Length: 340
Image (tube, rainbow, N blue to C red; front, side):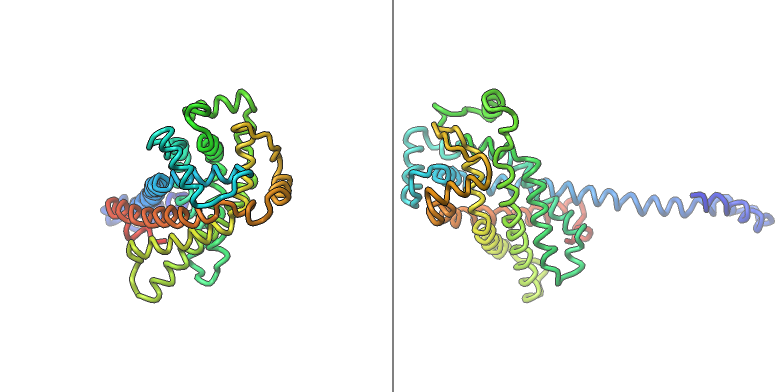
């Protein structure tokens, strides 16, 4: 601005005899600069907004689709006395249906939705921003940056929504007669009986687990999409391939982080259903599980269920996100400005 102000006297002196366009010469760059900056800012806001909306919808659809399987998995994860079998998981869901009705299969899903909608919205949006920050798309050979962008997105979203994850776990392992009836009751009861710090019990194994999970999930999905477009020359994979790539990402991500998922569920559900096990730290929990249950029956208990629900959930999540994001950006005219 100061440069424009200093130049204006010299301009008027050099063309004093002509008297016409001198007063309007200096404001023109200001008008052009404002016109250039405003759409950019608006476009950036719309990119974030469309990512948030698409992520929220994708997360809600994915988690609702696999909610019954998720409830069965959590119950086996926290119960060291009952060995996991797929038949046992099916019988658990059958008993829940007979005792509490069809909707009981989605018990705890309200807590899941309260968590997954902001979680998925933040995760997908953060992933796009971390990709820009780390310049992932500018250096195609840097795989570690692609992994790091996914891991950071997972840490960000998990940290901002963690108490809701704990509440969801508490509701999933109790029935509506002897346990928590509402999400509000979970928070009130925990704060009253166990203290507010309990809302973050199991946070560290969760964060440690989300690093390989989110990192490998996003890395696998983005890598498969990149290889597909390079091999076919198409701009993006169709819905079927997006589902398949997401399913592959789900299997790899879930398997890489599963032992820490067991640890966090044990720590989150201390004191529930008469459980008095003291899973107070990550190390003590790992030692206790290994000593009493072993590696296969302890750290990988219920993994086969995850190999079913994981690919379904992640496949739906990634493909839905890409589809809705493209639709929304077409609507607001960002298809040319929102390239990843």
